[in-house]
Image 1 (cartoon, chains in turn brown, red):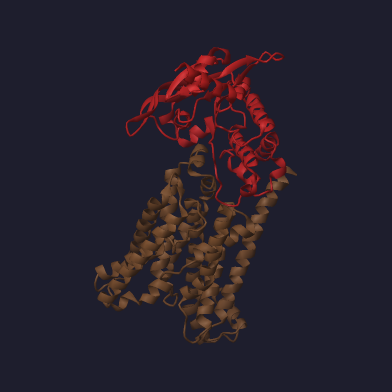
Image 2 (tube, chains in turn brown, red):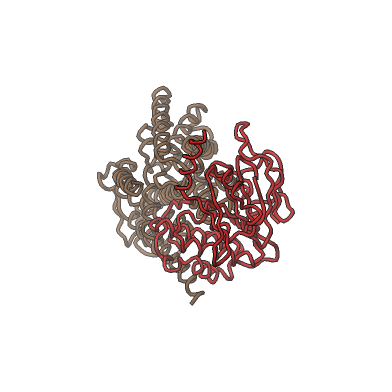
Length: 353
Length: 269
């Protein structure tokens, strides 16, 4: 019975993760099928099956092209960015010991966007010149921007091993305003087609996703996400407090730096690929905790899966609601996320009073 | 042995702990007493390794604290701070589980059950920690700390507690101190910061009294407890009486006695 208890806990976690995984696969299949160019579900399966060596009849070449060259990379990039935002949100909340932390709200995303924009301006003629610099340089520069900002916010808001929510949000507001203004200014003067629009950076857009972005996304979002998942024990200990974590044998400083770097990397690369997409990192870890408890061993991977699901749903809606035009994806995530954020503030106030 | 020698700690050249030497032997309970602001908490933090002293050194089993890795330190000592908050909705049992040492997979289930039974929080295991009462939280934290040193080891270990009974009623205070009494027989040295002089007199093998960053007295209860010393250290008249039945020392700090004294002092002046 004793052994049974721990097994049942493990199998509970496995069950939650597999349900989320199946939901993710289903939403991805649905997303492959729907859009301005509708592809029947059966054709979707046929085209995918063909890729795995099954030769099926009646595969429409133009449908196959849309699906494999346009939709599939977009959906996979959405998976990585959404999952990355979910897990980075969960990890940052754990590190800051504060459930209101979100990469967008505390300024990591806007810091990344600012650095990405500045990078493009600083290196002129980059747009067509070298793919490697653009594909790798900009994400890394965006990561540096995110890291600088998250470090600054962390130092600003921390008092006696805890982060003060009010200072945290205010620091985020200040940094977001400043970064937003600087992005606007840079875009106004630069007038470079490579910079894309202000809307791209502030509200996000997955429309530019292609297979050429995939290697960067999988290596700089996928791998850091897995590394974050392995930090579950440290994040669990940190939820008791930094001092307590130290007493329990955790090298707090090292863990903090590791988590900050990994989160900033995930968010920065995400921003450089698809602009700023808000609130995913706030909503997702919360839903997981409410539904399945606070143990980071489950919260981290489940946040990745739910983030991927949420961003794919949002992207599907962005593509289809005003079809053939597209909504900026950040509009949709904010429509869900902002009211949720207000609800959280109310709830936390009630707990504190 | 946990030994601190000549430790000294300043905040902006203001000494909080001055030349303090203190030691805890495995198998004993050492109670640290003293008025608020005497430097008890700072001393506690230095011993726990949270802050390092400006001068002097702390040794765990003969090894310098600075030379020990965080993980090694955690295997020789567990610490219960005064207040701990949990930032996410963990259940009581999950909080206790967080205390499990990294290498203990085998008996973890049994150990968790034992410490939770001992601290009388077994029935709370599925409740959310954040929704527990102050006393329940404190006992869950104690269980969390105990599990870190629960598994028997061939070397002496130490448990440091900063006012672990502050939210507990009388019977629970005794439950906690009885646990510590049992624990010390496992080759564990216990250092406990207390406010209750009677509780300290009843359970501690030795007492250390801290005043203005100095150790004002250390030794067995009978050696340290004197009306003159206690009254001076706490800046409050204290009387010691012997319990007729148990022959134990009882500390009285009756407030009417206090006001009488003040009046008589004023009269003398």
